Amino acid sequence: MDILRLTANPFYLVFSENAVSQEGLAYTAYGIEARDEQGILCRLRDIAPRREPLFFLAERMNRGGMSLLHFKEVVMDFLLE
Figure 1 (tube, rainbow, N blue to C red):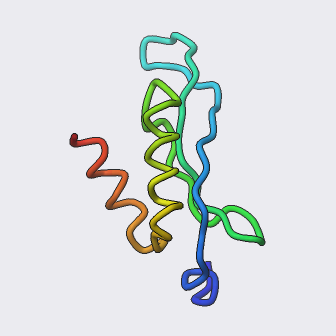
Figure 2 (figure 1 turned 135 degrees about the horizontal axis):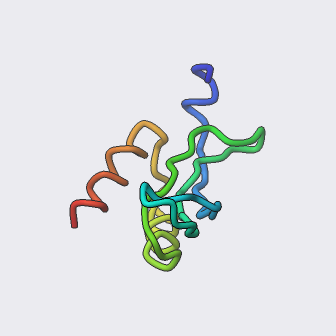
């Protein structure tokens, strides 16, 4: 990631992917990715078992124009709630 892309205004989207638990059970994992016009800047995987809470978090981050520099910190705070 270059400095110019870090200073760009990213937008945040929820994504899903297939995952396997430590017990070997398949499940759908949800995460959030930061993107700009050029593509994915950062991706945090397997944050929550449901899409809805992450959708509202991504919506708030987009509405607030959140910088990529705070992405991981905000998601960690969300997980501690």
